[in-house]
Image (cartoon, rainbow, N blue to C red; front, side, top):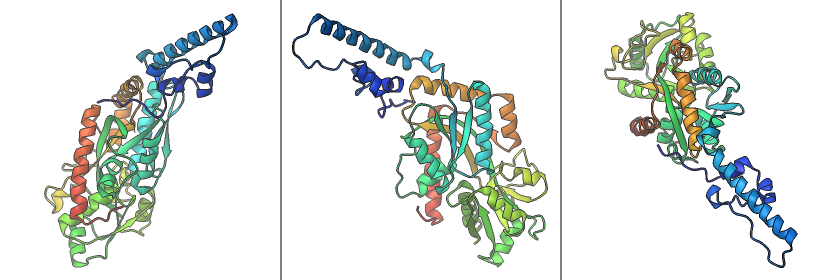
Length: 377
């Protein structure tokens, strides 16, 4: 993968402010390879002025050397020197948020002297966080838990985005995959997904399901299920999976679908009944819960996925250091256990594999959006 050079702010300007650069007689306007002393205004020069000019040249050369050092692997080894934020496009409590916090803790343990901090920026099916990530300074200090909604479903639904969901990002590694799970209150008469299908066919439009929002992975997986099962169930979007779950637990919502890490604690506690997982195979975390495919919709297979990405233009030494640290965190026994305990199967990747996965998923969900007549955004 080619990491694009940062054209928005020269490397030397990251080391020296523009004011410092000008006072040192350095032109940072063209980056490291165009460092040069400012041109003389002409006129007579006495010995003092000549000495001053020589000192400016020396200062410029020193600054150029420092700017070059800033892009070397040795310099990147000091990264990070301040907290790194990981943006999440959803409210706290959902599956995406849970996975992000586990990864953040793992990175903090790798760095020891610095921390990764989760910052929730909900809205637009993750679009707000995605745009903030794309337009942030490409210095390795603003990352995102990118996932199926932000980097496949939203691009498939959008008429136009203020960013390119592939070209404007640096893809570090996949984190893992997890099924969505359909749940209901234990008191509901529908005990299986087959019961849901049968009731919905007899009573079209009378059942409701909640999700974390329009265009999110749970919403699209349910719309695909409706399409293939030939049933009509109304979608009620919430501002986050936790709110939808609260309504299911209180009996105000018949069904809810979410990434498994979100509902998992409530399933284990018996507060909700899991009817089906959306993956091709049963989840090891809830092995007694059958798949959608087992209950009348053969071939059904939808899994949400997570990864860590930043914006395009992160300097390669910083990118490489960050990727190395991320893989160390994901391969640690503690992080693997915590993710697995939440229903996430850890799957890392190369940057190239990650990009290819994003492209294929975008193509897939574009077909689903069109087939299901899901409105553009």
